[in-house]
Image (cartoon, rainbow, N blue to C red; front, side):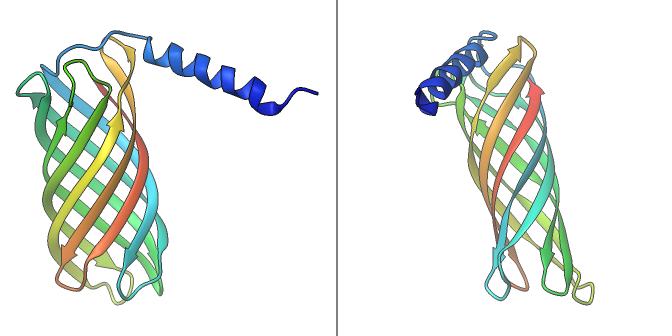
Length: 173
């Protein structure tokens, strides 16, 4: 009897090769747009870990062959004891590509965050810091799919909120 990994492994390798060879990569020049969605775990010192979701938008421009800088915004919601909590983030973001024609890139951002909790509707203002990794898969010369993993920390007046999100974005280039 054939082992399942003997069938699955070649299929995964063939799919990965097809996706990564779909379109050539070029330098990080021109306009970059990304629309993303993510889900993950949210945690703070006085609350239990909760699952949540986030939607994001990034618009930037290549400032060198390896660096894209721009503006980013995100809206997220997660469960919290006694109700849901939500946040809105806006700030600066960057994508750094360690090689000249890479797929792997480092993601970083900072900005302001406004958070509201379901417990009495308390609203707080803070600073959001984020760092992560992305792997760009070109679908065509002008469209790419990017799986991401991002860690965020919102430093608010109440207490820090930590997030670990896995997501995907669709973008140009």
